[in-house]
Image 1 (cartoon, helix red, strand yellow):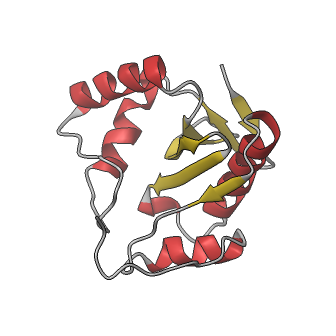
Image 2 (cartoon, rainbow, N blue to C red; image 1 turned 90 degrees about the vertical axis):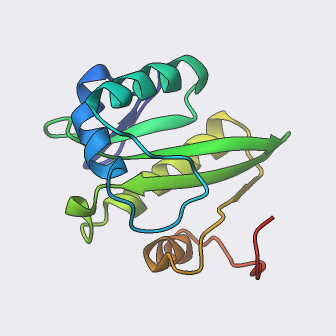
Length: 151
């Protein structure tokens, strides 16, 4: 079980009690996303949590407010080659503009470098996803290319 703490957040495995919060932010699509993510109801959110916890091995974590354990998003990674990880995130729009995304992503990237022996971390970001592009800039993820069409 993984438990990464920051000043204001806890990144942890999903719990069944997270289902309503997960459904809340997955049911509102603001940008196109390469990460699958439609949930039709609370029952599907519960099933999604069960599946994530069985397969994720700590690579898909709930982001929660430390004070009351409210889920506000999730952060995930996929190991591409021996030491390279692709990362992504989703956040509840109710918790924007508070610095939570930067705080969570920095802690998660440190986790990948320190405990998963990552050498390289990258993120695919849709051109229209301005918030994620700015987050990548804050994280010092440099833009290497821009695809006119994703394969």
